[in-house]
Length: 179
Image 1 (spheres, rainbow, N blue to C red):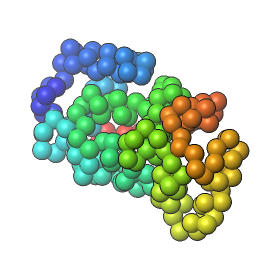
Image 2 (cartoon, rainbow, N blue to C red; image 1 turned 120 degrees about the vertical axis):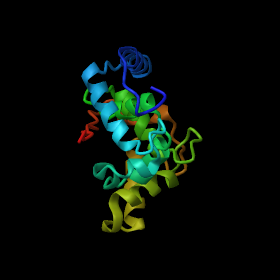
Image 3 (cartoon, helix red, strand yellow; image 1 turned 30 degrees about the horizontal axis):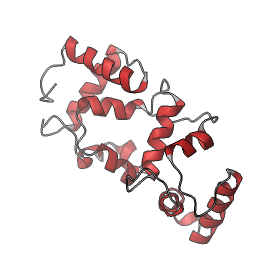
Image 4 (tube, rainbow, N blue to C red; image 1 turned 180 degrees about the horizontal axis):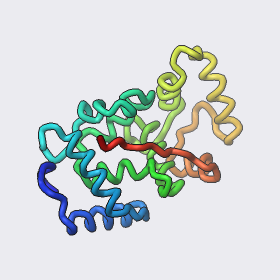
């Protein structure tokens, strides 16, 4: 698996399956791994064995996503196993915990393990674009935090995200075209 242009062996497939099962308790089928490997090789244009942020942006569905700039920080330099692990959060089989952890990482832009009011505002600006003013975003966010038992000064941890999102049915399913 070191060189992206090499063939994927049965051992490689089982290693990726074990990796995803160990990290996220998600059983990825052998066919899914083969399809993802084909897509990985297409994205890895220089056959380096990893995908750069620029290569990820060549996927139109990714480039058009309003969160792409935040996600790029998480995907730059992914090898194949980490590529599968990253995409597994978008699988219908992914647990709510796995999805919430990914959402938290998007908001935790400085990777300090805490999400501040300003961290959330930055992401909300990208999500809402020109359709809301900063004042409107701030009012909405203050209300949402208040309803969840937090204030503008609160720093949210991943456990807080579990508390807020844990009982919701988070949908984060996406197809990765293999063409």
